[in-house]
Length: 106
Ligand code: SF4
Image (cartoon, rainbow, N blue to C red; front, side, top):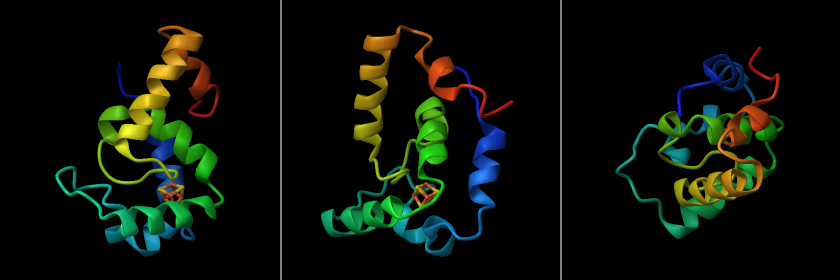
């Protein structure tokens, strides 16, 4: 799958109020080899649950697997995102990402 959604990532990251901007170390977006503790993972997920760009974030993370291969994005772990992608592929076909992405990156 090719990369899509760079503009969306920028939009999300520029949203100054996001918990992952305020506490980047908690979400480990840039540290693929770091295993989060259960407590830290739960805490980050709770923060995402209250984030007002969570829907855009989840969409971006799902259609950009190589850019979201670490940490918590939209209250999901890398394993949970892999499962979601597999389910979307099974239900929507190989171009599922185009449906999920929609017009949000245009
Ligand atoms: S949903 Fe979570 S990872 Fe996504 S922008 Fe909000 S705080 Fe950051």
